[in-house]
Image: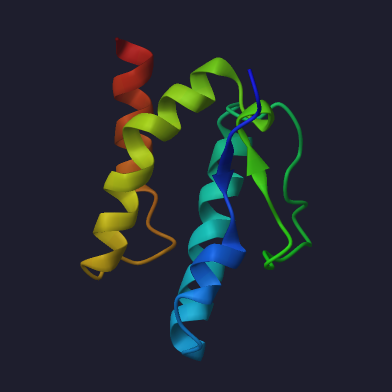
Length: 105
């Protein structure tokens, strides 16, 4: 089976040239990717602590553990919808709750 693209900042950046939007997306993606890494949901280090998200970064299904892919299916859209409603891009509460639910199941 072919690999599946999970995160592509370039697609998100292309939707708006607004600087504040791009900054919010950059912070949100860095927070999300580091959460995946810190929770052991990634198979590799996708983003080093001193690196920034840019349009060339890609996260593939193969970059995630099986649990990581299941987590993305359950949590990603819920978290991004909360960001759209004004939640801070550094607020991990939704991600933490979803991970706890996944690991409880």
